[in-house]
Length: 435
Image (cartoon, rainbow, N blue to C red):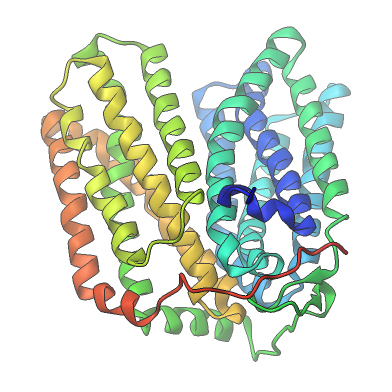
């Protein structure tokens, strides 16, 4: 019996090590989201102090994500990932020790949040860049789908749920202590990441992770210019990033800021209803990622990706009209599923079409443009909702995203590009990395 496509990456030892460590680390991140909130409250903080601590994490991420991409292209990625996890452990362990001794202050939490944001800025470009070196090309879609399935389940569901129980039963400090153990376990596991990596999917050759070529470039600025120049000269990449920038600007604010008001006004719901709907949105994302990981990469991969993101966003238009909980739930499930499916394809395209020596920088640039306008979107949504009916905002968002997808497909020349650069071809088998 052949192995299901979604499970094929697990045939490679290095992938099993990496995904196990990532799962534990992501679970700890989910716990931190809850433990941090109640630790701030336990220290006498209110909404302003909580916002400050949470903002420090975002500042660390956005300030260093481009540098993280440059580091992923300059430094051995295995060492970089292990170093980041070690730094995360030090930050959380310090907070745990301070909490246990009664010396913890708000600025300690803010500093730890900032360091965790910086860690994420370095970790994820390196993770994205190392995957093609430990897996053959035909398994990358399944690997990205597995991450897309795992992240909402562990970071948005299981981690916060466990943290809530620990905080309720013991204390926020106890929950942070458990987060320390998560990062310790992830660090130990990462040290088992083998030296034999696959440098060129489709061959059985291997190269030591410590021997990864690190180009000698004139400056960090030159590295950044090289990544930006490649993006500007690559239409499918440029127009997808432009689509992402605009879509984040018009999508995030209504979902994060205006959806609670739609829930209250149209459904008569409260915070529990809103939380449940967000949970359905996350479950949709996990299902979409899992289904995509189980299938072949589409021949028309750019068209399918933008179809998922564009046409899949149409149900947003009905959110402002319906007074049915289940209609709203189905709409959010579909948007979550199609958005995640497109994201899995997108991550795979970066790993398969971007040159290896640029992958870290392009991944970080993608991360940066996807996050940079989130605060702007949320800041604009509230005032806009005061002067424009909420139903009209959701309607315009639901209609605008498909239109933007068509524009990206057209001006990016993607219909022609995806035919000229086929990716779903027969590849020679690669032996599972066992060293």
